[in-house]
Every structure is written in structure tokens, then in C-alpha cells.
Length: 273
Image (cartoon, rainbow, N blue to C red; front, top):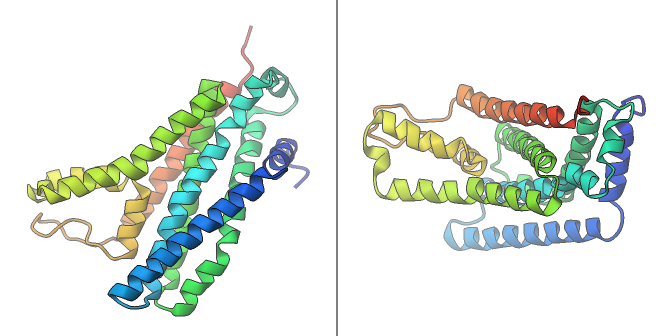
């Protein structure tokens, strides 16, 4: 791994992330929130339909989606802007490292934080699987999709960090973007579903449904894992999640990650005189 040109950046970023009491606070807060949400879901399930491994797994996966896709991007907001604030950006881009080495090193450190948080939740994942009812395909898809979305959000945060050059500004932009994607879009979907907009023809239903579902990964993965019909009855379109649609969703987030990566690399080039 030391032969990787971006290893130096990765090592420096990793030491800065996992040094001191900050990482202990993040891990403790993550575990407390995850356990609290899982216990709350367990209590609700026991009161309503009894203990169900698949439903409890959905609660756990949804909680990890929200926590990981907030902690990861917010921790990546200072990846490049901190170099500007320390007046070390010019020193970094004038080294022998290529822009892609700098970018991959910072992105790898952000992904490493996600893996650590995921590993902390393994006992709760095993608890859900021991109860039963979770198919291996849904388990693999859920966390593979979570990994792709986490990658996309981290690349977006690094791009914002490169554009704003101020950590607080980039954190505010990323926070608003995450709130819109994971909060506003599901709320809009609930509203349009209640007022019956989805029942006004196949074309409008497709636009309304996919405009919200594809932009909100939490809605998409929860709908797929619960076998929710893709479109409501009466629209003239067959429901159900097909493998092609799952592949389309994963491909869209991968393409978005590549686009944000290319835009960031363009900003990391040393300006020509």
C-alpha cells in the first residue's frame, strides 16, 4: 500500500481524524444514537406486530443510512478547505503528488471513517440476522447501496470544500443539501401521495415518484427492501422493483461521484501562469 502515491495524504488525514478525543466522541455518539433508534424500533415492533427480524433490520439500516450519510460528508467538508485556512494549499499542489493522488488520499480517509462506523454496528446487524427473516440478497444490496451513497456524498463534500475554501461555509452548504435530500424530498413525497397527484396518469406518476425516490436514497432502499410497489395502482404501469431499476439507481450515484471527483480534480490543478 505504501507504493500508492496518495498514501502520504491518506496517512496524514487518517492520523488527524483518529487522533484525540474527537473520534471517541463521534463513535460514542454514533453508537448511542444507533442503539437508541434500534431499541425504539424494537419496542414499536413488539407492541404492533411482534418481533420480526426483517422489520428490525429495516430500522437498523435506515438509522445507519441517516447517521453515516451525515457524519461522513460533514467530516469531509474540511478536507481541502482546511489546507486553504492553514495556508498550505499551494504547498500541497506543488509537490510531486498528482491531483488525483491528493484527492484519492483524502477520499480514502473519509471512506475509512465510514468503515470504522460500520464495524461498530456489526453486533446489532448480527442481532437482526439471528432473529431471522432477512434474505442475504436484501442484506447485501442494502449495504452495497449504502456504500455507494456514502461514496457519492463524500465526493460531493470534497467538491464543496474545494469550491468554498472555508470549512464553515462548506459545512453549511453540505448540511442544507443533506437536509433537502433526506428530509425535504421524503416530505414532498408524502404530501403528493396524500393529495392524489400520483393518481393523475402514468407519465405524471413516473415523474413525481422517481423525482423523489431517486434523489432520496433512504426512500429508495426502504421501498425496495419492503417490496413496495414502484407505482401506485391505477397508473397503468406494473409495479415492483426489477434488477434493472436497482442497477440504474446504483449507476446514477456512481456517475454523480465520478462527476464530483472530476470537478474537484480540475480545481486541484496548479494554476498556469
